[in-house]
Length: 460
Image 1 (tube, rainbow, N blue to C red):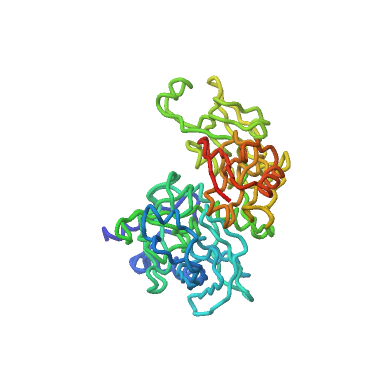
Image 2 (cartoon, rainbow, N blue to C red):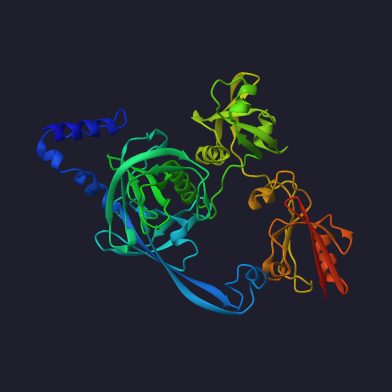
């Protein structure tokens, strides 16, 4: 009886306010454990098998940590098939599925298998490596079971959570735990940088893309990574919040082929104890703006360097990663209420969630075969180019947007600012093309590489 009362109390505490799920009323109901929730949710979690063809080059220095960089791209190209195994979650009856980008990104063949062993071909309709999310569309799918997205802003630390996926390829598996933490930032999962829900529900390789659900069977996150030295679960797993998944689904249904985040046009840093005293804060909170682009929507709304942003749409913001997340879930083309602290006073200001403007025009061009470095793409720096390449807000001039094979071998990198070629200053994209069409017997390219001066010399 004591154990039954403890379990009943634990379930009651784990449920969010207003939830309709009933506490087990007798020993028979308690004995069921999570079985009713799993029976409802598990059919919407699928196994994903992806294949991609990758090209590799074998050279004698490829395993050398120093010389491999100099001989990248040399050697005989070989194609090989790379297989990946993961999980996914069905979000609509017509076959919209969400998974991790690292499971299905760049795949040439994707097969999705449901718990009742039905198999579907699938294609990626929207993917983003940075967020590590991908939206799939199953071919000829209808009347599929699916999970409902819960507002992840209402998830609380200590809630019971279940992870459903296909760990190590053994078959669909359910593990239980609690939500261990929220707003985990500063973490890197492959290429993903972001904002995560932490759980101690065991997550292992193969769980990627699977579901993290609450005791009502609603989706609160997509399992994406673990912190582990051995490769197995140590009780620290991370899931991408459902609110970000919802924005991906919305953009996929709108027909976008590339996920788009609102552009802040700013850089900032967390408010620490030292800064808090200067801002008159008793407890450090918020993010202080350290740089602001003139075209930023925050500049248009009246923000300035030195202002502190404490909340977006009522949710706390303490790091740049949290700021990006809050703007992203607000949605491109919409508005957000941003709380600003200035001179001890707080104000709520409406800020438009816009794309990085392509103004002035980038005039991006790709160099032809009549140049000494064919295939290189260059453009005039503007907010859109700066955002795409992750460049400093102060970047100006002509930027390398794609090195191509020739540029990569020559030592160029995406984001390099071309300052001069053979001593002639570069002002426009056309200057680069003209100067590389008839360079003479020697070639000197002077670059700015994120604040460092770089010179590349060649004899032709």
